[in-house]
Length: 220
Length: 220
Image (cartoon, rainbow over all chains, first blue to last red; front, side, top):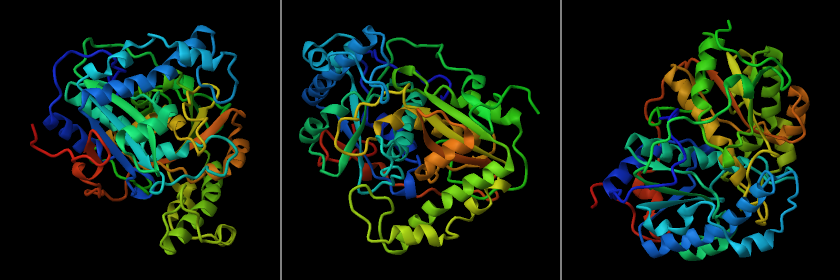
């Protein structure tokens, strides 16, 4: 599954039964979390009106993403400021990913939240946006995609709804301590993507130091 | 692998060859990242002196973790302030996890970093520690544990070295834009843990809303 699970954004009309979904989550739940505190929660969104609303909440962020891409920027870069007029982009909207315009038509959408009172975060004192909290929730989120793949399903791990967290909180009745970590649409893939473009091992590994030699195949 | 990959913190003396490690990373690399920008880097630490130093850098944070546990707190809780004297705990040290006192004896240690200029972060404007950046690196980190399991290896996804990021940066020569996301010791497990304690699906899922019905087995 690890080598073939692609980002699936187009689905057939075939439903995803609760039985299948239960099996997916029953495998995914063995993911680790900091201190094994298991602070994640999964809201299984079956109500089409709620799915549609979640899609609407993604769209301003999709529009900013599209505008940054069009401007040759790395979207949502945490280091380099954007030259894009974010408010205009948000207001204008875009059809960059049609998926979010018809999220009500996707068989099921999972919203993964994480209870910040129940997770470990080691980097809250660093003077930048932390990321370590993600270590307690994204292994589960990614397991869901892998386990879904094993059931013939496809999905995509998205975070586009996160900037509208306050509205997601109201829509789904989330407790104040829960952060929204991911939104995962799941269904039967309309197409199979067979080649994933990823860096070779030599391109993202080095030995002992960042500027060391790459790890190569067939080495001792 | 998903159901059986446990947090392995004790290893035999058997080495992990570069060949095996290459295979592990060659499978893990298919993990997704925001915009497929693949901002993660893996430093493969073979030098025992560097591994030992990394273990030393984990120890103050392990000591705080142990002190918070002893005080009945949820360590590194991002919501509730700690009542523990953090500076004293850091200075005192602890043998809570002996692993970090002999990291030089572990066959290989991977340090996973992520280039913040190359990842998507949707929550940098929320007024709390962000977590979404983790979505671009922890699927890879977790894939490494799963792929290692498939090779008969064990490991554990840790973030304990993150508070000492500045010193890790110097030790490994990391670029300024890279954040430290995880440290993963890998080796042959000294013991096999066969039962992972995890919540049942019913305990972490609800339908349509946070306060909805749990997803149950054998439902329609």
